[in-house]
Length: 298
Image (tube, rainbow, N blue to C red; front, top):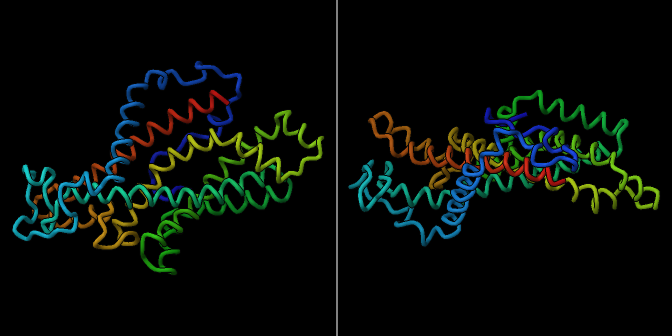
C-alpha cells in the first residue's frame, strides 16, 4: 500500500542478494551513476544544513509580513520572491525544511518499529502467526492508503502530528512485507541454526543477531521510502489535513500559493513545489544506490 502514487522502493529481491555478490551484482545502469549519487547526497546535505542552521541561513524572518511586497518577483532583497502576505519565500522554504524533513523521519520511525517487528515475527514463527500477519498486511495493502489516512484524520482531527501517526500506520505493512522477505532469507543461514542449537532464545537471536544483520537492507529501503513519506505529508498538507497556518511546511506553502496562480504569479507555488520535487528525487537516487551497495556487502 502506498499513501501516494510516488515511485516504489526497491523490492525484497534487491535486499536478499547473497554475500557472494560482487560489484557485478549492481545493475549496469546504476554502476555509472556515481555522479548523480554524490550530487544528490551533497544536495541533501545542504538542505539538512540549511534546516539546522535556519536562523543563520534565512535572510529574513519567515513570519515578517510586508503588504507592500505581495507576490513580488525575485529581487536582490527577496531572491525567490514573496508570497500572498509579502513574506520572503526563501526564508520560508529554509524554515519549512525543518517540518518537511522531521515529519517523514518521525512517520518512518513509527512505521519501522511496527513493520520490522511484524515482519520479523512472521518470518521467525511461521505457521499461523505468519498467516495472520500476512492477511493483516494484505488487507492494509488492498485499502487505499490515502483514504485510510483521511479516515484516521477525520476521527482524530487535522494536524501534522495526526498526519504523521496515520501515515506511520499506513507505511507499516509496506515495511513489514519487505522485512519478512529479508528475514526469511536471513533465517535460512547457518548461524541462526547454530544459535538455536546453543539454546539461545528466539527473542535474543532476533534482537541481537537477526535484525542487526538485516539493518543494511532495511536502511537502504527506508531511505527511498523517506521521499515517499515526504511527498505523502506534503499532499496531506496541501489538502488541508496536515500542517496548518502559519506553518511554512512545503505542502502547505504550495496550497497557499494557489491564489497567486490565478493571477499568473508562479513563484509562491513553484518554489516550495520545486523543493519537494528535488528532495524526493535526491532521496530516491541516494536510497536506490545505497540499497544496491549495502545489499552487495551483506
